[in-house]
Structures are given as C-alpha cells and as structure tokens.
Image (tube, rainbow, N blue to C red):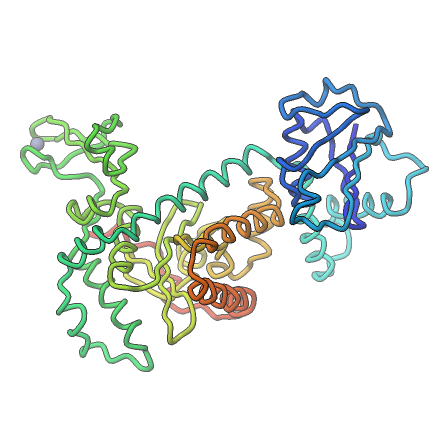
Amino acid sequence: MNIKILFENEEYSVDLSDLETVEDLKAIIFSLTFLEPSSQNLVVMGKILQDEEKINSLHLIQNQRVLLVDNEKNKKNNREQKIELVTTNTISNQNQNKREQQMNNNKTTIKTKTNTQNNTETQKSLINKEIGIVENQNPQEQKRMLSRITSYLEHVRQYESQTLQNKILTILPLEELLIGGEEQNEEETPPEYSQAKRIMGWFKKKFFKWTKSPECNFCSGATKLVGYGQPTFDERKYGAGKVECYCCSLCNQITRFPRYNSVEKLVDTKCGRCGEWANTFCGIMRAMGYDTRYILDMTDHVWVEVWIESLNRWIHFDCCENISDRPFTYEQGWKKKLTYVFAFSTEEVVDVTARYTKNIELVIKRRTEKHKISEPWLQKQLQLINNKLQNTLTQERRKIVKQRQTEELKQLNFQYKNRNNFFEEQRPRISGFEN
Ligand SMILES: [Zn+2]
C-alpha cells in the first residue's frame, strides 16, 4: 500500500510498508511540506492517529482519505496550499491521472538512468529530483543528524566564556603574535589575515603537541593503547566522554589519556589529536577577537573558519596542517569522499560543504544515498535553527550575520566550483604522520 501526498501541485508517493509508526509518516510529510510533525493531526474516519501507532495496525484500505489538520494554520503559518493524503494501490493501474503517470515515469527514469540518454543536463535535473524526493527517508538518521547538530551548537558556546578568553590571553605571547610580522611580507595579504596565520604557525610549532600515544606518566617511557576507561568526576568536568588507557612498555603502568572537550583544560594539557587541536585553536582565535566557526566534516575531521573582514569571506584554517584557504585539501589531497561539512558558531550553523568540494552535486548524491536524509528537509532544519539562534542577537549584529550569509551563499554557489586547486591542496595529510 502506498500513500499519495499532494502538495503545491506536486504528488509524492510513499510506500507505507517502509514505515513503522505514525510518527515516521509525519516525518515524511514534514520533509516534503515543512509542516512540523507537532502541528500535524492525522485523522482517519474521524479518529486522530497517535504518533506511536503502528501503520499496519491502522487497517488502511485502498483510496482511503487521510485528513491532515494543521494545528498552526490559524497562527503565523499562512500556508496557502492544502496537503492531501490518499492511500493507493502499490501497483499503478490504468485509471491513474496524468500527473501520477508523469511522476512514475520520472521514477523509472531515475532508476534506469544509466541506460537512457547521457545528456548531462537531464542527468542533473534527475539527480535534483532524486534529492528532492528521497523516497525511503530514514527518520532515525534525521533524528541523529539533528542531535549531532544540536550537540555541536552546544559545544561552541564555551568559546564565548569571558573567563576562558581571559585565561587564553594570559597564556598567549601577545607581543610575538601581534608585532613580529615583518618577516612574511606576502603580497596583498590583509594584516588581520597575516596575523591569523601567525597565530596558527605559533600554535602548530610552539604550543600544541600531537598525541599519538602519551608518554608514560611514571617513567616517560613509550606506551601502547590497551583499552578504554570511564572518565573520573574531574575528567568529566572538563568534557571528557572517553578515556584511552595506555600501558608502558618499560614499567607496565597504565597512563590515562582523557579526550577533553573543554578548551579551559586543553590550554593546560596542550596536546591531543585533530579534535583537541581545532577545538583549542578555535578558542584562541575567539579570544583574539576573530569571528571564528568550528567546522565539522562528518567523515571525521575538524578544522576552523575565520572571518576576514577585508576579504569579505570565511577562510579555511587547518591548524593541524598549518594551512589556510586551501579548502580542496581534503577531497583532492587526502582523497576524502566528503558528505556533510557544517560550520558552527553561537550565531549560526551553515552547510559549507560546497566550499570543500569541486563537485557538490556528486557529494549531495552520495550523502543522500548514504544517509537517506532529504536535502530540503535538512536545509529547512538549518534555517529554523538559525532563526532561533539569531533571534537572540541585537538587531545590528543580526544584520551583519545575515549579510555575511547572503554573501557566503553566493560564494558557495559560484566561486568554489570554478576555482582551480593549488599545488598544496594535492598534498596528503601530514598531521599524525610527522616525526
Ligand atoms: Zn613507564
């Protein structure tokens, strides 16, 4: 049994056997229409369906109308188009209307597109259609995605702490970082960008250490990972969720290596892997007054973006590698198959994937196939989150953030795709492989 969802002159067909509960159906309706699940009342023959009800226990019959009553309708939501739901037979019959036929034709073309014409424009529009629809969306993945985004938004709040920023400023060798910039007289590099690079160079060469395995706490001997432990109360206080345990090859004692999340602690321990590096560097840049975003690449890397006002753009900074403005490094040099790259600050979360790939269409196709998350749904979620975050800003600040967003969107759409990559971007990863 399928259910046909009609909305804004579009018709989407969803296979009900792919869904378990009414809540799953609501998630699908949301992804197509952006009507929040909490605002959806689904009614079958006068009965309101409960979220936890199993779809197959509803005993839906063919051509059954499922009424959707929009809770929000009389409030701010001036939705013009009604959403209609009708169950249909899975096997299409002769009597279906023209629209449905077209829709099915499209579906067949998508599935067998390698056998049909090789016109790239057609393929592109087919891919886009595929993305827009995403028939078997995965509500679990959607939930997981939202909770990851929320936890990173929580994570970046620490950088705004005045206590932390003050502590960082007492640690930094300010004279060295602010003044000693004569040596690298690069052409047309704005001073605030040169200074940011200088801070990164100091961070990489003099401040932070890469920890493959820690030195033994007792005899400074070499250690080997033997397992994982629970964080102590103190370790948890500084955000350690996981503790790696290392055994010394000389004295056999165990050295704990808590993976701290708190920059306040990390500026004391001064060591870790790319997570600790990017995290601490982000805190340092904030303390130095730069608008900074924490960047999460969901295929397992993190770095930072810094706003350079005179260039009117966000610039990629990877402190592990000591490189900046080399966004194709991961795809071209490290040969990563990117999926989602998000930028986080307390003011916004932005899908910045397009900055880091030369073929965003391919990446979107890859991630949609892998995660079964609809793109319109995701973009809408980000928009909702951003509205919420930016509501707390002053009017003046909100205006600046919005202007930057508009400018960034233009850049992501046009500039990056057409940029040639630099020689350095072909370089494989160095962090973790040095010495
Ligand atoms: Zn030892």
